[in-house]
Amino acid sequence: MIKSLFPEEACWKLTPSDLVFLWEECKRCFYLKLVDHFDRPRMAMPKIFTVIDSKMKDCLINERTERISSQLPSGIVKFGEKWIESKPISLKNHSTSCYIRGKLDAVVAFDDGSYGVIDFKTSRPSAAHADVYFKQLNAYAYSLQNAALGKLSLSPVTRLGLLIFEPELFVHNGGGSATMAGSLSWIEVRQDPQVFLRLLDNVLDVLERVEAPEADPECGWCNYLKRGVQA
Image (cartoon, rainbow, N blue to C red):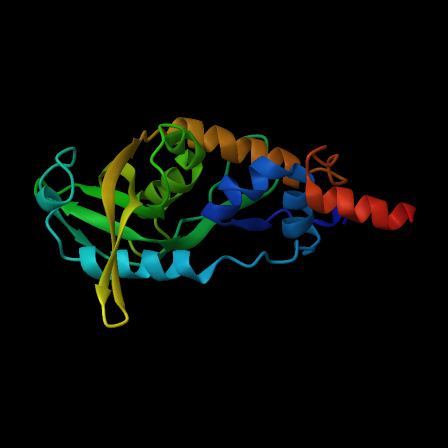
C-alpha cells in the first residue's frame, strides 16, 4: 500500500497486545497487519492458561485488595473483562492518528477514589515482566483516562500491575478429584504517559512509511515467507 493513498484523517486501531508482542517482535509484520491487512496466522494458545485466567477472575472479582497483596492500597477488584477505547490520538508531525482498543482483565477501585489496572498471568514471577507489559498496561491506563465517547472512563489511574499465579502444589483428593495450589505475586508496572506517547510517535512513523520496513532477522514468520519465495 502506498502512503500517498492514506486519507489524511486515517486513524489506526492499535491493540494493547499488539504493542506488547507484534511491535517488539517484528516491525514489518506490524506494518503489514495494520496497513495491508495481512496478518500472521494465529498461534494456538494452550486452553489451560485461558481456563486458569478465567477462574482467577471469577474468584477475585469483588475481592478486597487487602486479601490479595499487602503492596496494594485498600480497595476492591471491579470491572472484570471490560472493553476500553481511547479518543483519537493526534501527535505532532504526523498526517494520521491512532486510537487504542482492547479488553482489560480487571480494575481496582481504591478507597481513596483512584483506580488501578490489573492483568492476570500464570507464570513464574520475574521483575522483567514489568518491562514486558509496560506498553499494554499503559495503553489501558491511557484509554481509561482519555476514553472515547460512551466508553469506559475512569480517572485517576494511579497503579498498574500484574497479579501472577505460580502453581506450586498438586494435591490428589481421591475419587477422580485434584487441587492445584500456588502463590500470588504482585508485580508493579510504572505508569508513564509521556514514554507511552513517544512509543505511539514511533508507531506512527512506521505506519506512515511508503513501504514496509525490513523484517526482524529473528522473525520466524518473515523467514518462513522468504524461504517460500526463494524455493
